[in-house]
Amino acid sequence: FWMPIQTRTEMLTTGFRSVLGIKVFGADLAEIENVGVQIERALSDFPETRSAFAERTTGGYFLDFTIKREAAARYGLTVGDVNDIIETAIGGKTIGTTVEGRERYPISVRYARDFREDIDALKRVLVPLPQTENSKGLPAMGGSGKTQDPLDQRIAHVPISALADIGFKTGPPSIRNENGQLVGFVFVDLTTSDIGGYVARATERISERVKFPQGYYMQWAGQFENMRSAEKRLTVLIPFTLLIIFVLIYLNTGSAIKTMIVFLAVPFSLVGAFWTLYLLDYNTSVAVWVGLIALAGLDAETGVVMLLYLDQSWEKHRHAGRMNNLPELEYAVIEGAVQRIRPKIMTVCAILFGLLPIMWSPTNQAGADVMKRIAAPMIGGVITSAVLELLIYPVIFVMWRKRSLPKAGTF
Image (tube, rainbow, N blue to C red; front, side, top):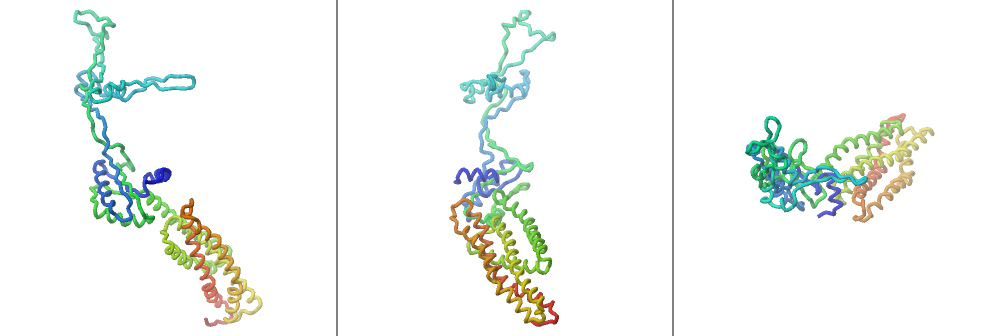
């Protein structure tokens, strides 16, 4: 069982009282319940399943009044007249409002409990019959041919058992409707955080053991639905973020080649990011993808710093007239890459020292699980991208700049 606040949060965000849920769509509630029970049995012994429960859509008991239309017509009553008596005498009907100062209270009337506590008592509920009038609009005459005194007139009544059949029937306690179709819920609780993998395996189990009638189908919901929605948004956000980073670097460097060199750090940083996730046994999630997006920005920062020092060394030697052959180019690159290694390492260390305390936070601390999954890929990615920038960037820079030498060299 979950804590009440967690159950409430899940209900507000997904509509389910569990992490994962299955919606069964169809045209008949009884058949929907049958399919849901089959899914419950198929997942009850499935690995990584804590519990599976199918909502019973037809388990309610109701007091049903079936009005006899022909009998009601013989007494001069309509179905609406009988329903009004049922509503007023049994359920209660508001007939007015009492005003007490600024307060207003509705006035409701109905039979006392002794007259409506069981079926036998309900069968004795009296229904008043309409008074008949002659053609002149006067009350009906008595047996002596004289008009009866209004005080002697009596309103005729008939018990409701003569007008309706009363009994208990089973039916749905609640009817769910979604997208114009009836729907039933199956609540699934997991012991794993890999929701995507569980859904893929569980779908195979359900397809093997559950037979869906024609026109009936299922749909995963709960946190899985939120995850799919987040994936659709990330498919737009990630390319858009990379495009923004590319434009910013291009505006800074003014060269498409330099921008592409900086962007080479992204795949190398992903190597370290995914290795870190593997070692920490973290599954991919929205928090992990947010960390990967932030990692792209860190790669651009450290890559621009490395490229800046290489360009400064290149420009320095070129203006001094010492950029005429390949050895002079290599010397300039070594000066820019090796002799300026301290500021580069300080840049990487500043990033790491800012992220490592997040990994030391207690697991039970509020927000720690999310922050760790954001910081983990950033830590691993910064380390591998730093290795790339210190070892591979100089080589790529030499291969690019040697084409600008007055005389072609070999490398």
